[in-house]
Image 1 (cartoon, one colour):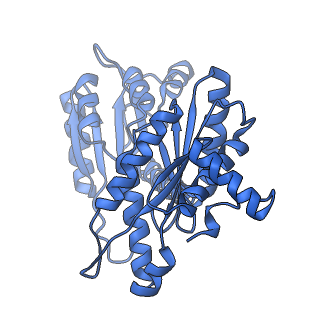
Image 2: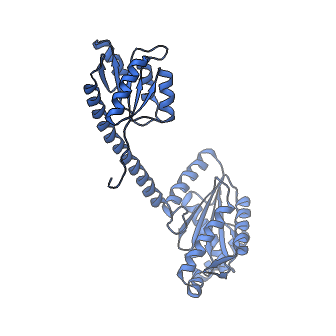
Image 3: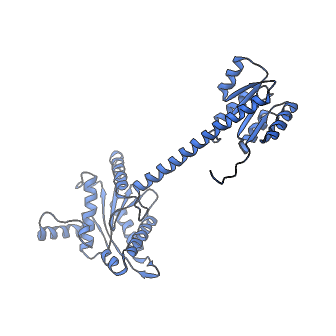
Length: 343
């Protein structure tokens, strides 16, 4: 990268012979490397864990923890970056080299070491490490980008809550779980009252801010296992697993009161807001599937809007049934039409 200060590569020399360590240290220092030495495998592993070097020159024959075991432990540690290991041994035997390479060594030199050959192998390993590090960075960047794309695909960009697609996925999973385990599942459909008037009086940016704040109030009112999302426009849907109808109505009423008491503001201008809510729950002999459960909550929301707003209506309550019957008498079998038709 242009302007980046390139540091000298760090070489860890691991050898139980002090003379061998010193010879290599002096030669590497003179060639422009930064060197560190370890007298045995245990010390080498500690250095690698504390501050991984760029390359390791590792003697095979050492007491207690030999070079093969050091290489095996380093390569098996997923927390470490790729660290090239060059083994050095006095035994020029194929079997010994195979053991080292199987343990994780990336290259081999035979003692007595020709420094020019060793340094050439170090340069080669450092080039491989640079390519490996660049690949890992690109993979990490790709993983982050994919995670961000996934988050955008399932999140509402305005409120940061689940979007409709993600809510539908969660609802499907929760309903299947509820049916399988015969557990209750409730849904609460909220709608902001007189939202068009908010936009007309204060502007669309103020309306956006109100939606964000209402989303925060609803999220703060839930349990950790509940899920809330923006279902569309000024509509929010809360999924309440393991919740019977009475408990869901209690939750919805608490959320309604919190919104009514919340001090909304935009650019220093305060304003009030209220929400209406329809609540339904499964199991219910009138509701066969999850689509009917969702429609039941939406129908209850329609009644809440139609009968004064700023209130919670439960599906199949006496109030709900009376208003649905009245709506049928006035408009025919198509009613109720859903909360979106009432502001």
